[in-house]
Amino acid sequence: MTTLAASDTVHLRSWRADDIDKLVQAAAGISRDTLALRFGVRCTTIPDWYLARITEGWAQGTWNACVAEDGGRVVGWAEYGLNSDPRHADIAALVCDSYQGNGLGKQLVKELASPARAASVRVLHAQIQVGNQAARRALYAALPDPRCTELQDGQWHYVMCLPEARNRTQP
Image (cartoon, rainbow, N blue to C red):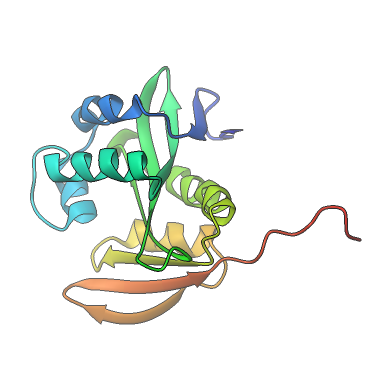
């Protein structure tokens, strides 16, 4: 997919089935604070229920992700999961602590828009913990016109419409 300008060693690519094991290994580079901002509860590792949801969604074709990899290790990912209306999907991202602050989250979310669009997703939804300013900045930088629809239960709720893919043969 993409090599990031910030680091020649970090590459973005599509999710692969064996990445689930790499997420477990990636947890060593994720602080409790970062995990709490992503999952909304204090935890010491990536929750088992989350890993099970990924495995099930990937198998059913209702979940996909873009992965940031450095030296064969997953250092971040952005994901979408289809809603009951498959034109709508929830998105989320997580970047390992030592890779935060260089635009990796923004780039992951931006890259995720292509496979979502290819899966006929037209509307993305995101819920971001109030204290997660970095995630809010990444969202605004990565996607066109995020619209905050409400603040509920300590989370900002956003909606973003994905533009239709342009046919490159038209002028």
